[in-house]
Image (cartoon, rainbow, N blue to C red; front, top):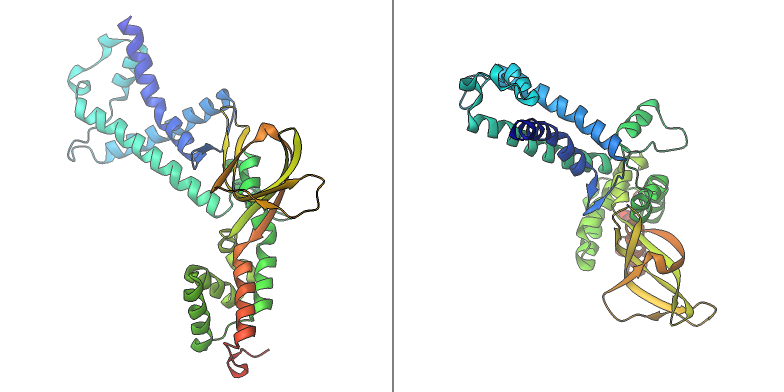
Amino acid sequence: MGSIALPAVIFMLSLLPGYILINAYNRAEGAPLNYAPFAVTTTKAIIYAAFFHLVWFAICHALHGVGFIHRVDINSLAALMMGRYDHIDLQNTMQPLPIFLYFMSQYLVALLLGHVTQYFVLKHNLDWAEGEKPTASQKILAFFFSFDMPWFNLLKGRDQNIRSGRLTALEIRDLLGVLTSKDKWKDSLHTIGKYLKIEHAITDIIKVLEAENPNTHKNTLADYIQVSCDVVTDINNESYILKGYIDDFYFDSNGLLDRIILRGASKRRYRSRLPFTPILGDLFVLKYADLKSLNIQYENLLLNYAELIAGLLAADKAISLEDRPPE
């Protein structure tokens, strides 16, 4: 029994870097971003694990003799995995600390690499080809990094981010004009930002206004997307329309949408023309199975801030005509 179990354990330990990398890459905010079939996941895990071992073999060979680093005895490893213990050089094999460091370093790097890669991919939208005519490089990147999780993109507003990024930048420019090097103009914006407690948003607004290409900061604009929704559901056998901002959402074990968490929720009867009534409480939990329909609306908070600032500037005349940039 032991002769069968040991090769299986070694094989699983060898594959773990691939599984750890895939799991770290495919999870965001506690929710899986991908529900690929087991065969596909296993194939990817084998490929990634093989890559890790090749890199570690090369490192161990290059740094042999430094600290606890030893060359990997490939023949002994193959013999262990096949259960042929009579072909093993025990002197080179029975060294617990180097073996422990070899595997643990792989697991830690795989975990870190998965999270870092996911952050970079989501930040720069590399998981899908943007625009009406995506380039060949965008298609290739989307093929390798794509997530099979449309609900995540929809409820996070990621699809809308790309489509509206340039338009939002132009709208902000129309509201506030293009900044020049006059510091007094910027100081006025920063003063308003401190008053409204949105200093970080003011900094990003100035970046958008100063950019030569409005599309340069599309990812900055994307960070300010707020997703609201209107849903129709039954409460006490009556149909109601509920509205609010999506604060969070959860999936079930099969990757299907399970719950939506609303912030600032309000309700009214379906056919009523009365105003919406606020629902007391900080968060409202909706079971997706109880919803009859779901309407999604995207708002860009940065544009909302710009509209508010434009109104304040117009009302209080915070910027005089000579301080304004030339048309």
